[in-house]
Length: 477
Image 1 (tube, helix red, strand yellow):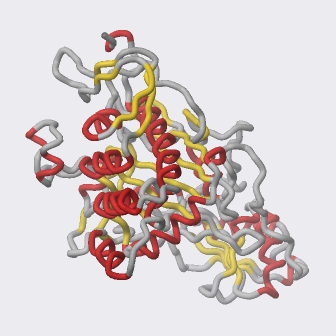
Image 2: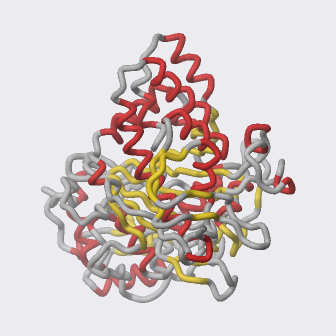
């Protein structure tokens, strides 16, 4: 997201752009075996754009090793220590950024890398380990399995990339409420040392800021996420300001730093494609950029780690899936319009029900297609029948093949309390097909998401919000 904001402004000729294209590192979008979920377009036919940002702690290059850290980590497995999902709304009016703490314990699905090596699923592992299971495509697969959110692209940056971007931009302003030195008696800490106030950090100091955990009040990965949000907010503003520069040399340096710093999926393999995404992101005012951290609680199974909070985390993921702005402001997002096709009587409507509840961890919930077909029959759908097909489906959907069946499909969904946004037109079905997803493994009532009346998640903030990080008195000088 940060690098994209300046790539389209570098200015130059064909050969220069070819040179930049050659600097971009590319990998597969997803290494998981489950199919990527589909976006639901709004009434205007627009769809959101989701980009997963990954910060790698890889130390497999001289540049990264020169930045310090334990030598025992040199050439070791890379970890996805920063993970942020950037959601650009379908109407391009707002951006939501969701962070996942690196200490989150969850299921990492089976992944297969480009060489064919298979990494078996891990049922309860730390999310940052996903990067070492084939590459960023496994981190993408892990997010998709947990959230059900379709991810269009990823962008990954390593330690050296963070430093080069901060240097190219001329420094990123951050603020601390008192002097800070992140260093513990046993040698832990990032090494960050700053006096009270606002400072434009770059080079290794920028990296120290992003890695700081010991030094903030609380001393956990959640406080590190707050500091990363502040850095992101500030860097967005600086990149916007720098993108307006008329100095070709400055813009060239920014573009070169951005391309050298990034590893992206193969759908973003050229400057032209990156530029297209940059233009869409640049249209959103900073006041409509919201950042939050996935709701989480401290794990009892793995002390010191966290797990997604049941209900609250799913509510946040639902808001992203359904394109609901986290800042609470109205947008042009439209709920599906009423179909012009009138629904036939339930007794005249044929419905095929499939059991799509299978997950690698839990397997299939037996008999779900038969159970839900029975629920439909009780509501007058005498021609509802269970099918033996069992496609994997994270969220329950009702699919229809043509416009003349749309009204019938919506009526089927309404009868069971399935959201209108889960009714999809698809050329993969012959008639109305209800796929019971992994979100409805039991019970006779479609589960309603919890709603607290406010966006779930901690640390929700606007990108133009000012403030200082709160320093732990034990780490001041």
